[in-house]
Image (cartoon, rainbow, N blue to C red; front, top):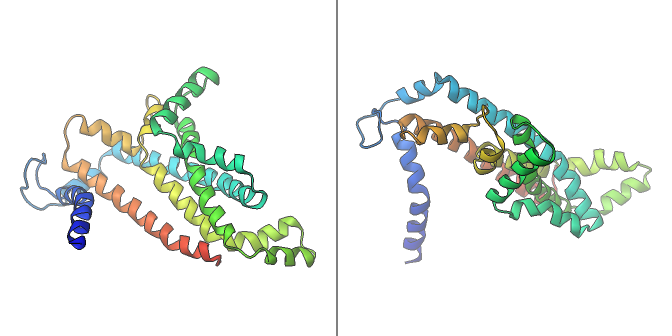
Length: 253
């Protein structure tokens, strides 16, 4: 009985995703019914300049925001773990716990009313950093918690400076956690819609925004095709992060 309920739950979760993948190969302009198998919609997708531009914007935003959030998250994770700074832990994790609509609206008001920033790629990157840095900090902090601090004390006793201890001892040991944090931040950024919708402004589109603008007219198999590719990228990054995270928990380089 338990297996049946578990199967039903997983079927409920993954059947819609499977339908999206299957209908990306549908030889029809509409998804009303299955007509036949084709790869034509992937060729159409590769020739869609607007879609490719939106995908490039998403990759650029995800890379920049993940790089910045991983750097800040690593420093925050080290500070939280080493100095037991509870207030910093609260400040870093607060954007993660906040509803995305609230974060998006607050950032929009901050950009426009307080600093007069023009909405575009910079505003989106900073917004993604705001909600990604907490995930990177958590992964790095967990990696540090599993380490033996006698290693750092031994390095200091041998005359190593704090910077050399970090660069030659601490960083190699937490590197899998840092990479896993980067991949998690990248995954969260590349498919974010709500916060990006509020902070992108006019004339700048990411892939989720482009998909949203297309489905307001009709859900064509091209939308299914780009959704399938985005799904494969997201799942691949998450699986890679999951493979790195156990190594980070063991404190191995």
